[in-house]
Image (tube, rainbow, N blue to C red; front, side, top):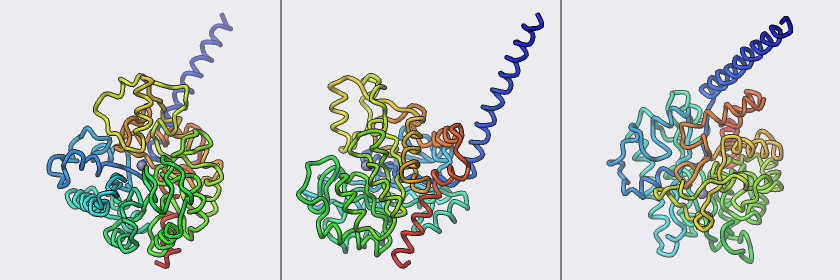
Length: 391
Ligand SMILES: [Zn+2]
């Protein structure tokens, strides 16, 4: 009898202590998340609005909940402090000579969004802007170009995009350019041509991040050799953990560490998911956005009738991999929300960012390290990138 009551007491203690422990973690993570500056490297809302023919934002009130991964209530719930809005345009527009024109329209769309919601958004052009705007409780809004095709082989156009607010350029999208090799196209004789090197140097000079997401591993290595300022991978994960061409290999992670840059983890299950976890293709529904960089994946899934899955833990596995290989100062978040057809379980939209903080706390990371991952690494790299440009 005595033994039984001891066991009961033990179980009770375990239960109380156990639940109290979890509650502490959840409460601590919540406070840490709310008091941190969260910077996300890549969000495709502007392209979704364009697809829905709403360049003036007259049909979608972002103050109301939308079907998108992103709207203002969800951004607030997710504690987003700063966002790089992607002004992606398809690589095919190179052929019609309209890539720069449509990119300018997408930049205008971001400015329209910022003006329409002045209590929520403010344009950030510098690292200082990010911190200042976040301190006022608004979401610092940056502009990122996705694909070197947007400048149509012109450094003058590159400078014009900078003047309009663009602060990073992903060097390619899904297709090769005449001057750089993409990860999802056929190999080129040279991964980065002399003109490509001029583009990198000019971006360093004017103070725009060189973004190595989407380019081939060979091109990444060439870019890293030329870069004189910190680079970013705005939405790429770890190749060492998941062998997908869109991810960053370990040797490049080490180069990014030396360069002072940041690799911002992409949440897309096809880039991070474990091969063993799948769900039926039918679960995708018909109503999803297909970025052309993933069309191949989607076609494969259609044939196989299943799609890869991931969860918050998978995202954090990639964060930890990059932190281990490159160092804790060189990892960040680059969700790709509104740019991909599937998302990890528990990471379905921008309101779910706090789950990452909670998982990091659960795994024993320090508050200081978590703040770096969430946003401070990007802010530091931004400052260093500006300094390197002489600004
Ligand atoms: Zn992309």
